[in-house]
Amino acid sequence: MDSMELEREKGITIQSAATFCDWEATMPATGEKEKYAINIIDTPGHVDFTIEVERALRVLDGAILVLCAVAGVQSQTTTVDRQMRRYNVPRISFINKMDRPGANPWRVINQIRQKLKIAAAAVQVPIGVEDDLRGVVDLIRWKANYNQGEKGNQVVESDEIPAEALELAKEKRRELNEQLAELANAIHRATTGLKFSPIFLGSAIKNTAVQPLLGGVCAYLPQPAEHKVTAHDTSPPVSAPPVELTPASAAPLVALAFKLEEGRFGQLTYMRVYQGTMRKGQFIRHACTGKKVKVPRLVRMHSNEMEDIQEIGPGEICAIFGIDCASGDT
View 1 (tube, one colour):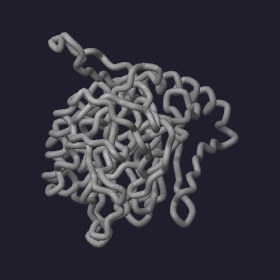
View 2 (cartoon, one colour):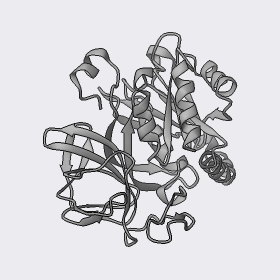
View 3 (cartoon, rainbow, N blue to C red):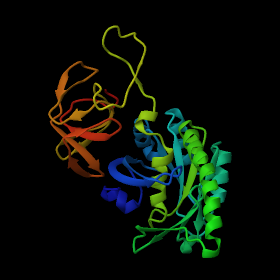
View 4 (cartoon, one colour):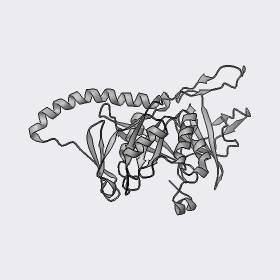
C-alpha cells in the first residue's frame, strides 16, 4: 500500500493509507464460511512517524501488531503497544518474515509475554522453516494450509485421513469440534476484552499464511457492534452524560474526521462513520461550528486510488472532498 515514491525507494511506510476488501472467512468455531467487509489502515512502523499511528488507532475497532520473526520486539513495538492500550484497541499479532534466516517465532512469543506483558499464544505452527516455509497448521481447526502458485495466492487446505483410520478419525473429530467451538469463542472474548492476543505466523512478501491472518481478523477482532463508542450530545443541555452510539444505518449520522490530506483536488478528509449513513449530496451538520455542509464527493480509498461511492454505512471508512474541518471534528 506504499504509494509515495520515497516509501518505495526506502522500503518503509511514511504516511498511513486506507483500503477496503471483501473477505470470505472460515469460522473456527463452526467451520462455516462467512462473508466480511474489512476496512484496513496501514500505518508506519518507523518511530519518526508515530503520529500517523496515533491518528489511526483512535478510529479502529481492532488492530494487527506486526513483528519481525528475526528482530522480535523492538523499541517501536513497545511504543505502538502503549498506544493500543491508551485507546483500548484489541489486537491480534502477526509474526512476519518467517522465511528469513534465523526466524524464531517462539523466541518472539516469549518476548511478547515478557516485554509487553501480554497474554499471548500461537494459533498456528509453521510448515517448514526459513526458505522452506510452505504454509501453517491451524491449531484451532486442525488443518494444514499450504500456499502454492507463483505469488502464493492459491491456498490448499489438507485434511486427508488414511482409510484404515477414517472412522475413528471422524469420531474423534466430532469430539474435538465440540471442545474447539468453546475454545474459539473463548479466544474471541479474551481478545475483544483486551486480555489475550492470538498470534499468527507467515511471510507477507511471499504471501504465505496471509489468508489465515485475514480469517483471524474476522474471527477474533470485534465487529463495530461489539465495540462500545460514546459521544457527547451537543444539543442543550450540553452537560448531559455521554450517549452510546448504535452502529445502525437508519440512526442519525455520527462520523469523525481523523486525518486531513492535500490531494490533487483539494483537501481530502478521512472519516470514520460510527452511526447512520453518509450519502453523496447529503447535508451534514458540523458539530463544532453548528453549520450545515454538503458532501459534494464521497470516495473509498485504496491507498492513493479513489473509488467513487454513493453512500457509506456504520463501521466504514471513507474520504470526502470539499469539507472545511480539522482532524478530530465530528
